[in-house]
Length: 274
Image 1 (cartoon, rainbow, N blue to C red):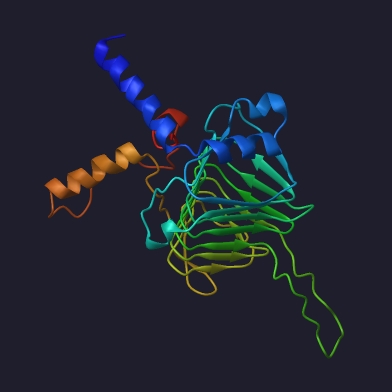
Image 2 (cartoon, rainbow, N blue to C red; image 1 turned 180 degrees about the vertical axis):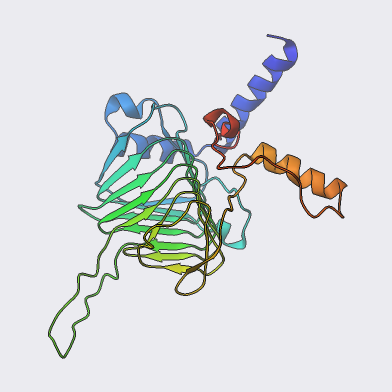
């Protein structure tokens, strides 16, 4: 290892030491995890965090290592990002790989509820993610700033003619490689298939049956308005594409490969780090 590599390594480690909120990181890990898991510090707090209820259970379905879940990292630089992250964990939280929970996001899991975060899940600023029964997020899905995902209306409504009271709670499932644009709302019963995109202020609260991967949903309630679309997931490739259009401002498109793109963990390793 050369001197430059050694210097960069030391600089990186010093940077981690400065950015991490060690007291809350220590408390969170040893409060919710068995001693052997907590000693690896899979939860790392780097911003303002309010730890409200921590009586739930954490289940890792992935290798446990330092910084598997980064809490409070500001990745979108939105005005709301200065607010603290809130964690309310009374049910089961399943972690399937590296995740980022941006500062000012709220994660709420009620008793007997279950929430799953797939590998590469990115929860941006101001997002409210609330599970009363079941919320499942697929791998490499990005939930943009201000989005609201809750599987229950909480309060019950009675039909005055029939006397019937509908169940206010239904599970939510969001597929792999999805992109929820800013201020998307998904309520109980909402399902988003693999590789789908929502436009700003889209509202989903039902299953859409047979839907092709790559569909774009828009409106209130949401309808399919485009097909065969997918967000560029690799940040390195996206940077290359943006540079191409910057250098070729009159270009209408850039030729890319066809089909659904899957991304390996190595391509996002730098982004999902402290």
